[in-house]
Image: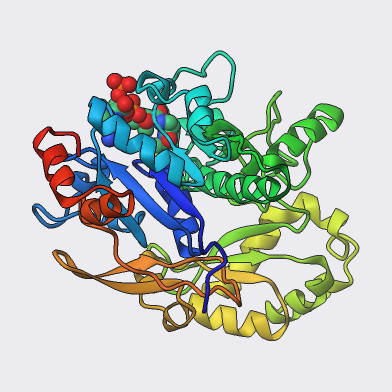
Length: 415
Ligand code: COA
């Protein structure tokens, strides 16, 4: 079966996490992704957080599936020529270098346009134009500058970053959407364009609800679904909300049976208004269904802490899976806190290809996260990440270089 992006060639100049997540997605959708790396070194993540000596790390392998790897020294004049040939042959150049690096290499937007006016040049940067545009940025910097950290954690503690890589992988997702949108526009404009996804912007986009709350707070001085209500204090900015739900249906994380020894024996419980009577029945507080102090969402807001404490008395008598099973019978929205170990072992995720086992020539078998986006006409088959420069000869031949020329370029240190 053909793939959605069959025929699209991506010149992948990305490294670390944000850019590689983007190009990996495009590869999963069928694009030919040619990753350019420096000979002898490669993407720095190949050697970061290694669990096996001299073997590409899981950090690298899990972000670079389905790609080809070529080595080019783009600061070497002959290496530059190879890169120019690739620019002429590809549809999209994706990069996430520090600001200005591509220009310093000699590949300005104007130069790329000269070489290939249909080329889409897609970049991840830490910040968009403004005071921080020249800064290098990593994941947690973006989480802090994008508003996530100030709104994550508990009221009495410091700002907290989240394990979800919303700065890197989140921005990679944004960039991938920008790229396919630009490819679509090119079908009628015939022109390439620049696509920029700034990590601060991507994180803020994912924190949209907190900017909503900032404006609610400024108007009313209070947010009744936040744990600060009714006894705590609100300041000028959206406070950290602990585990409160970001939406209109109050929720909290509650202990389940075994919590004393298992750090993940918890469940997320949502007191969704339409099932309030059922919740009251399940926890044995039938009278709350009609008690005017509890019967309506507005009446419940000042008592949320007590309500969750009462529900927790019930959840503590069940494992998170037992609780989930019972609550789902009544359509009560809830979710177990799953550890990475439980997720890795979950058969249904293996079945859908969301967790995939991949074989690698030097590493052996390992688990990875497959394509979370499923297209019925473009199924994803996850193949291993390339070894450094594994496809240099193959790609050079496709560019029209003879084996002798390739060998000379290698001797000159250009590839
Ligand atoms: N041949 C020759 N030189 C190459 C090369 C190649 N194939 N590939 C990269 N380089 C050079 C670059 O030209 C640059 O050189 P210069 O600084 O002399 O111009 C150099 O390698 C390093 O690139 P840089 O991007 O500055 O790497 P870094 O390790 O210092 O910084 C980041 C890493 C992630 C902080 C930085 O790239 C960045 O801020 N990127 C944008 C935001 C981002 O994506 N952050 C998240 C990463 S997960």
